[in-house]
Image 1: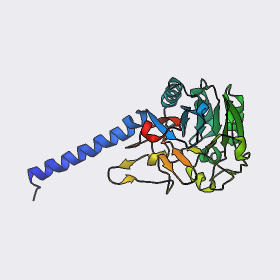
Image 2 (image 1 turned 180 degrees about the horizontal axis):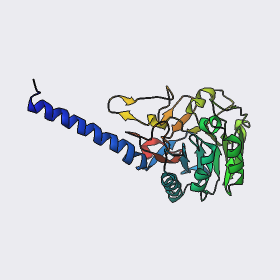
Image 3 (image 1 turned 180 degrees about the vertical axis):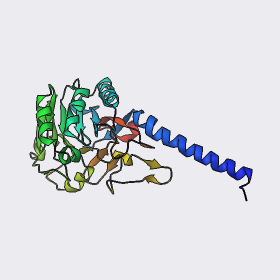
Image 4 (image 1 turned 30 degrees about the horizontal axis):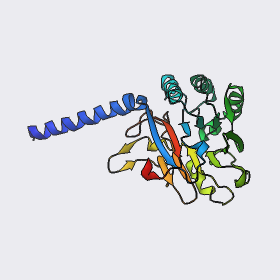
Amino acid sequence: MSSPAPLRLALAGIAGGLAALGVYAAAVEPRRLEVRRKTIHVRGLPDDLEGLRIALLSDFHAGRLTPWSVLRRAAEAAMRTQPHLIALTGDFVDRSPDDLDRAMDAIRELWAPLGAYAVPGNHDHAVGAIEQWRRAIAGHRTLEDLTNRYVLVRHGEATLCVAGTDDLEEGSPRLRLPPPDLRDLTILLAHNPDQAERSRREDDAVDLILSGHTHGGQVRLPSVGALHRKSPIYDHGLRRRPWTQVYTSRGIGTTFLPVRLGAPPEVALLELTGRPREVW
């Protein structure tokens, strides 16, 4: 017995809708780059650091799954925000060290007055690109490698500590920060946001951790959220913890499958304030 016409029409509509959703997830959303602006309250922020703007770019995943044009647009979008500082938090390549040149070419013009800093991600290690990555960062005209190290930057009368760690999964994260009384604000670059769970010690005194890695799930469904979570705590966006705050970027590229749904690529512009929230 053939299906009633209304049922056939309903099934056809569902099939058509799923096909359209698949096309959108593969061809549209991975290229729908967003500049996501977020104000972050930092208790005790010095006046000289009020309004500090940080551009965060993460997870380029340069390779066949991520068009070079998306990487280039992300770098251009970051520069248009006129950040004081730029942070790049790893996974420059996806599957091959040969793609690192494409990532570096896309970000060749990055510059910020308080510096542009980078740490590697798990993919950079896993595909054997880490030594090439270090040479590429060293050869960039403005980028500085912060793997397991920190720099102290004076801005007015305030001292900003910008630090970075190696990847939590594939690298060897080890970092000792200067005493808290030598720094007014500490920002940590860590590819994996779960690094925050290792930064609970009082002598760490990290005010803000900048991360990526999760891609915001890459595919998110209404009422369900991310179909695959790389972190049980830090999914995407800002998460406040008793000892620090973590901002996790959705990233720019894709991995495993060249699709995004409900998690468009982003460049984050984070503006710091010490003002009470009712004043924002």
